[in-house]
Amino acid sequence: MTARTLNRLPVPGATLHYEVTGTGPLLLLIADGDSDAGAFDSMIDLLAATHTVVAYDPRGNSRSQYTAEPTGDAVATSTADALALIDLLSPNAPAFVFGTGTGAITGLDLITHHPDRVRMLVAHEPPCIELLPDATDARAFFEDVHETYLREGAPMAQLLYAGGTGLDEDDLPAPEDLRPEYRDLLDRTHKNTETYFAHTLIPFTTYRPNLQALVPHTNKIVPAAGRQASAHLPARPVAVLSTHLGWPVVTFPGPHTGYASHPTPFATLLTQVLEAELT
Figure 1: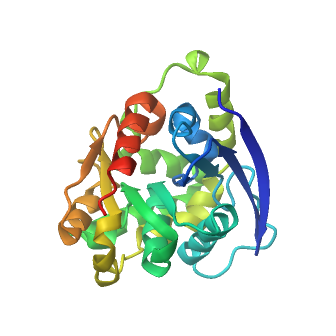
Figure 2: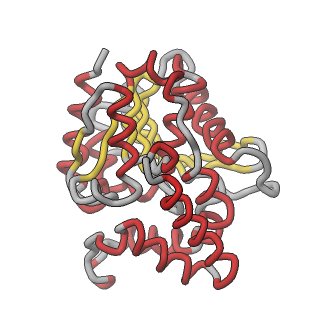
Figure 3: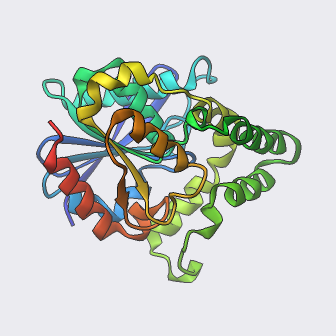
């Protein structure tokens, strides 16, 4: 196993937990929703053979706790956090970025406003539903999830959310067969659902990418989706995004969480994409 260092970075309103593994150009991994750095554990050693891999807990999740009540634009704040890590760990060179789900939205916002700090972005299933022709229906679904959270709490909202996004179809081993570190991840992320439904869900799903601003950087943006997830709501917007960018969607193994369920082929393909560099 490659040596990993655990670190903390104070940022306005929070303290970010981040982990650094390997050597080489910086690869920043941005987790989805209520997840954290541990979601990528199974493939980090593979990626660290060619990159300095940085994974972190998004603000408000797990070990990246708020130090002040969250305010302002949640997407812009998440982008500032990602930028702070890149500037700290790769001050003289742009970073490769892999973002999944809401992490992909952070990546899109990052490359929109700070294109000089991104060498390549792999945007894996950004749920930017405002790009969809049926955006009204998709928006109504996520609003229903949020209202369910406010009315009935996180467990009921999670059931509704999983059923409507296809996450209830993801294959996981029985609890007793999970690796200890993955059980720890599930314990941590279970506690993050309150933050996700309260502060993340609506601002991120209603984020509309500035397609005009992205076009000059199409040679650095790779739209991506899981093979088993492409028909589900969170993955559908990436097909629209790819049409605007003029690049086909790269299909990764497995469901939305293929980086955890199929880590070896997922990491192998991600490494190949990064090495190809569309530039």
